[in-house]
Amino acid sequence: MSIKLRELIRSIRACKTAAEERAVVARECALIRTAFKDDDTQFRHRNIAKLLFIHMMGYPTHFGQMECLKLIASSKFPEKRVGYLGLTQLLDENTEVLMLVTNSVKNDMGQDNQYVNGLALCALGNIASSEMCRALAREVERLMNSTNPYIRKKAALCAMRIVKKVEEIEDKFNGRVAPLLEDRNHGVLISGCCLLTTLLEINPDYVPDFRRHIPSLVRALRNMVQSGYSNAAEYDIAGITDPFLQAKILRLLRLLGTGSVDASDEMNDILAQVATNTEGAKNTGNAILYECVLTIMSIEAESGLRVLAINILGRFLLSRDNNIRYVALSTLQRVVTIDVKAVQRHRTTIIECLKDSDISIRKRTLDVAYALINEENIKGMIKELLNCLLVAETDFKEDLCSKICMAVDKYAPDRRWQLDTLIKVMCLGGQFVKEPQREKFCRVVASTPEMHSYTVIKLYFNMKDSLSQEALVHVGVWCLGEFGDHLVSGRAVGPNKEPIRVAPSDILDLLQDVVRKPPNPDKAYAIHSLVAAALIKLVTRCPSEIERIRKALRRFECSLSVDLQQRSCEFLELLESDWSSSRAGILDRMPVSDRDIAGTGAIGDSSIGGVPPSAGGGGGDLLDLLDDGGGAPA
Image (cartoon, rainbow, N blue to C red; front, side, top):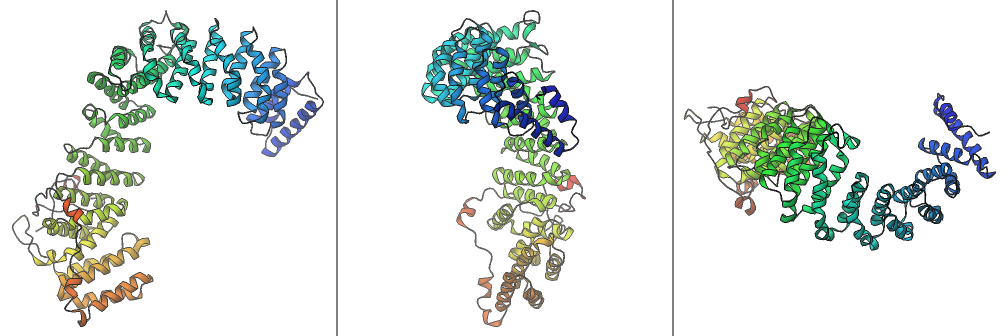
């Protein structure tokens, strides 16, 4: 016995377990199959309605597809309505039986009942295959000329589906667009905007031909902006007249105005009106303002209008709604290349968003902040980013370190500042500085002889302070091996004019501490390999410690790493007397490539100008850390 849909829903909701629910659905599906088999016409529409609910629950309902076609062929409107609903839900454009319904849809499109026409057009617009679109395109074109606005708007939306599915007849509806855009009915007008937008997105070559419709669109938009509540109460949403239509027109104007100064001039005034008259207190107004900003930034708008658009985004950034702020940041990232100066005015507000508790807001803000960095503001922006790095959460530090390193490599005013900043980054987030950025730092140091002494002294004292930052230890060990002679020679002079001299034994003590307490025990092999290379290099830099170096290298002979064993054996062989004559040449400094030498710009002051910053991972004083000076203590 067939039960009503309401009773089926009640019985399913009463189930306490998934197995009980499956049993109820299986039992009802069996009854529905039996009814279909017996050709029960009385309750066919009820059975299809129940199948729709079962389909929404995620159970298979393919056995009801043919029954939908039978309901569509019925002369009774309630059955036809359920049939079309089942057609759009239980079938898709790839279903083989879909072609069987083409004739029924064509007949319904030819009926005098507007609601039957609407059912057929909705079904065709939702699931029509390319074959159905070809067969019924003429009928749709005929209905677009109907005097009934209800049919015209549905026919226009159906034409949009046909244009997407069948490329060869996309120009069939070009001549039908103009009457739709002139229509006073908002439903027809928004359908016409959707159809024209689809045509222009599929074939941008049509844009010049359709620019003649810009005055009509501007007039329709102005009427909505200027009309009061009493004149447009039917379309009012939160004090905004038909925001859906306004958004569609703004999007269409964006396509028509791109790349054309004349077309942009026609819409400048109305865009300014929308931007100034739309209230942004609610999401409805914010949606219109967002579309308006995108349109202004996409067309050849006046500079003042672009400043107005970016100021709107600046207001969005002050909103308490994270969704609005995220949208503003995403838009700023897209338009920052168009008008950098206007976006720069909101730099302070953008930087404040880096402190937001939402990680998605922080990451999007970082992208915008990086896009704002240039040669003029590099020092101020990097100082702000270093402030953020000092207090940033772990999952944000990797992106932050990467952006800082990229900006420093691209816009550094001189090598002194570049090296200082990268060392600060490694002191604060050394675990998150990637291998390519560490290698880049080493190449920069190697290609700048004037900074060898300054860099190795600064790295030495930072490592003495803390060995917890992986990148700092990696580049520090490498620099100790390459330029350790600058530490022991005493050639460097401190701020009080006294020479800075480090005992060779202190250097080896520091390397032993690195071996004993690597910053990342999981990667101890990598740091041990660097230490071994640094030790063999120090043979020529600190000849008095050769026996201690030999002893340290012998410890690596028993390493679990075969590669490290091999290296230590080879290094020990170099310490034999047979290699005395050629040892200095073999252990000379790493040669610098011509490309790195060519990239050397301004050097900057290479004197030791102050106390090195604390590398305690946030325990030091922030002002000291961000001081532009820095060096080794006297």
